[in-house]
Length: 97
Image 1 (tube, rainbow, N blue to C red):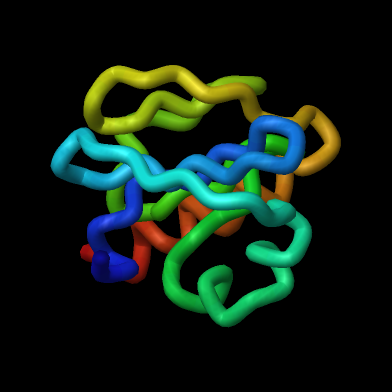
Image 2: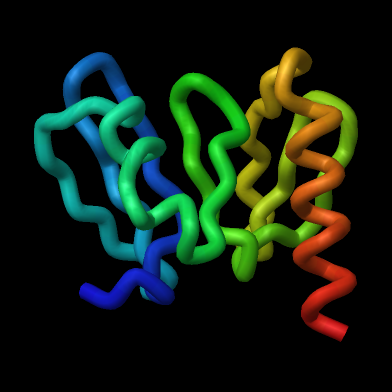
């Protein structure tokens, strides 16, 4: 599994679910907090909610309090983090062009 193939990481209590671009999932036990303190966050990932970290490359649309992935999956966005999330996402889009 390559980092660029990770669409998002989801935390469900102590279980972590890695959603991959091919539609498959990998599960393991861990904490999202530990993931957010790793080098993964410097590799184009964004902590959008207490239960989700997403890969910038798979974001389709960002609206207030929700983020839509390219596959149509809608994820919640933390109201407390929205301003920072929006700024980082817009910065990512500017760097892509």
